[in-house]
Image 1 (spheres, rainbow, N blue to C red):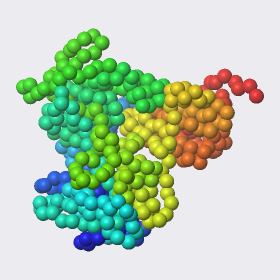
Image 2 (cartoon, one colour):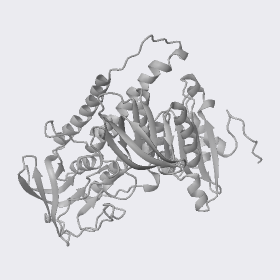
Image 3 (cartoon, one colour):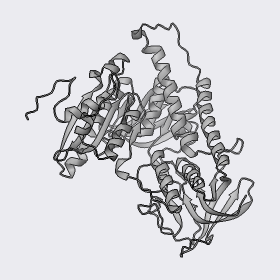
Image 4 (cartoon, rainbow, N blue to C red):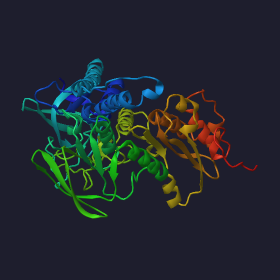
Length: 489
């Protein structure tokens, strides 16, 4: 293993491993430092996303949806199953196999791209205040898995250490009864009663998994607005669907205390009716994530960070230290894997002397419940607050031939465009395959498309994507498969 590198990346999640691969492809000598996740298992690349986040949760969401359909939704197709049983261990084993396939795939990519994988915990000991192109002026100390310490030098450092679940003192996580998102992906049996603190993306997805598998799920949200970061209309429509599915979502409810008593969790909370008590078999704490930035830098290193641990960077992801970059969950913006990956690609290109940028106005967001929610760009409430004139077109999946054929008619597509220029400002989708459909909106907006541009584009029939086409027609009152007021010319 070398001691001097062009680039050392700290962290091997979606931001870090993508940055490492691209740096190596560009001819830069590259190393990636990542912690050993479990002393008793093979070390794995991929960070939280691949190991205990995005991928395993989506595997369980798919498995739980198939289980629910098998027991409740197939009869209308003329398919009758006399008995459906759940083998949770097999479901978990499948989830683990998916994770292993992808993490070993990244390990193979590291080998083929000649990236040195250093397994340990990194500390940046020294960063030169004067950046030169030919000196290895960054020093990193690594406590290796065998507890020995080794030092490496690099011209550039990319910090991609990701984030961890936020813990709250009033609900101390033991990952047996009170669990975080990682623990919630590893239950060995379906809890009869499951409580969840937080109705954000993680809370909704995990709640959906266990509710489908038979748990009675109750979600507690301190805010009085559901999904305040999403489009208000879409959020209200999704709340109706979740409640109909059996997710008991309680808004304006604040947790006072959670404690383990007699192999169950007792919580005290307040809501508009006053103080109350509930007992659950398990409690998931899903109140957000915090950047993993503590301990990365030696005390004497002058790095600018905020009180929450986010590292200050400019639009090129450069930190206050020359030659040191930060990407992904450690910096401003949504904590999304695809956002971190794009930042990793940008920084790799910049280090190699090339040009690349990230359009932070067009970061798609997705909630992988059923139906899915996905959006990009501005919400209607944001445009109102900023005094921007706009027009809206919506189209329900209930009017889609493909959606009717496959019995996935919940939800709609909503397009918001500028009233004067017709440029698309935001697209919001609630429905089956929303996570795939939103890519069409991102591409269109990246090229500055108007709703008329989409209306003049041919879409295959019958497809879910036709709803995007019809919503664009609806912006001008010209939708074909719903009744609209006639637009005067």
